[in-house]
Length: 73
Image 1: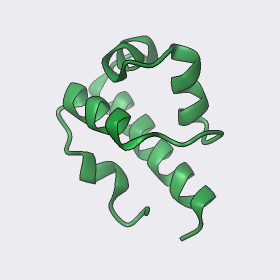
Image 2: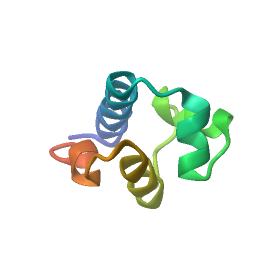
Image 3: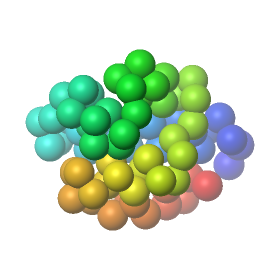
């Protein structure tokens, strides 16, 4: 899997998890300790999530980090 495809797959999974949980991007950005602008960059696939950010997002959404990265790396 290419880097860009992996990035977009992870972004899509995070977006879906946020939607299913009914949470807004601002709350997720705060939980991930990044700005809303940075989160939007990551959710659009223009930049990559760092592993520690995915861990914090997963913790906030109560989803294992592996859910976001499985088969995407």
